[in-house]
Length: 86
Image (tube, rainbow, N blue to C red; front, side, top):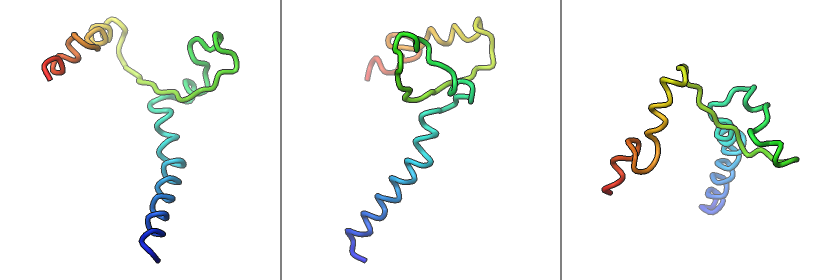
């Protein structure tokens, strides 16, 4: 078997593994079956829209405990403090 055929075989195997195993997990990262099956927020604004993925994070805490952490996200806030000087 030539080197070129080996490369094509490896690339083909990688593409099949990505399509069959990796991508399906990436497009529904952390989402439950209910979240995947349910409508997107604002789905009524785009009739017949296509879904690209449903990623979710489940936080087992009340909103008043989570909110202080969320407001730190973003540039010029606590979440990105180390990036300001790079």
